[in-house]
Image (tube, rainbow, N blue to C red; front, side, top):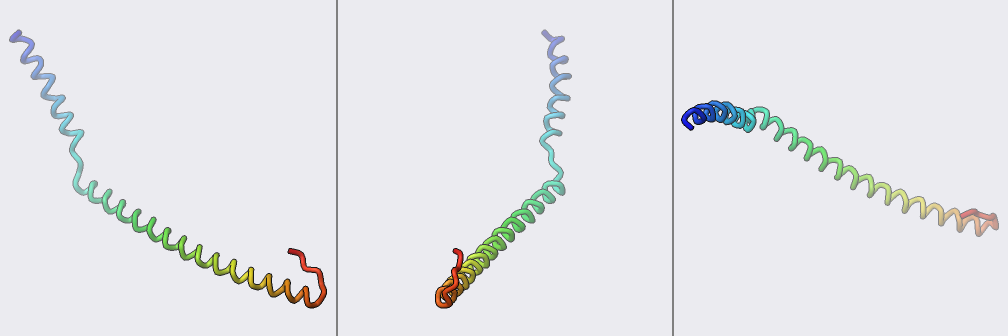
Length: 85
């Protein structure tokens, strides 16, 4: 039994060091990852606001086209010209 104890300690020691090394993270790398995450979040938020602006512009253009279509339809009706819808 006394022979197995030193042998176990020889195996446990390097495994413990290996486990501790696997948990270590370089602080600079971690800060870089956090900064990249913040930059990505800002980019996604900016894309969201641009999408909202584009949606408002599209809705506005649809309203203009609908108004023009109505005007053209009325003018064609007054002139007696068939107007396809």
